[in-house]
Length: 139
Image (tube, rainbow, N blue to C red; front, side, top):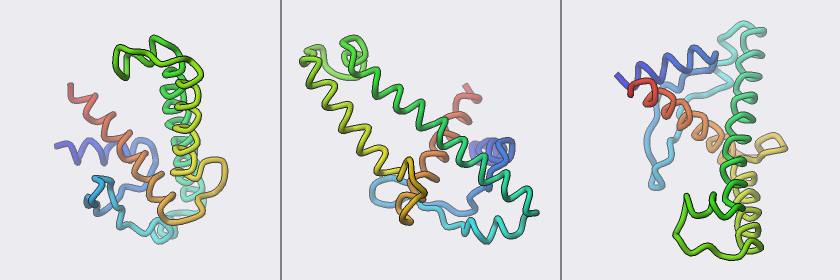
C-alpha cells in the first residue's frame, strides 16, 4: 500500500520512480536505477522537465531544512528540539552554522553533485520527503 502511494507521488511530481531500493548500514536508501538510462527512454522535453522538477524539489526541501536549522538559533526553537537547559546564543549560532555547512556539503548544494555519494544523498532526501508525504496522506 505504501509503495503504491509513494510511486503515485513520484509520478504526480513528474519524477523517475526508483525501481529497486535497499538499506545500507546507515539506513539510507541506495538507488539502483540508472537515471541517465531512464531519462534516455523519455522524450527529450520530458527528460528536461524531469531534471528540472528534481532540482526544483531539492531546492524546496533544502530551504525547508535550512529554515528548521535556523529556527534552532532562537531560544524557543532550541528548546523544542533539545533539552531544557539552553546554551548561550553564540553557541547555538555556531552549532547551526556548522550543521548547515555539513548539510550543504552532504548534498553538494550550490554546485552540481561532484560525486556519486552526493547524488545518492539528493535522491535519498527526495525519497524520504516523498515517503513522509505518503504517510501524511494516510493519516
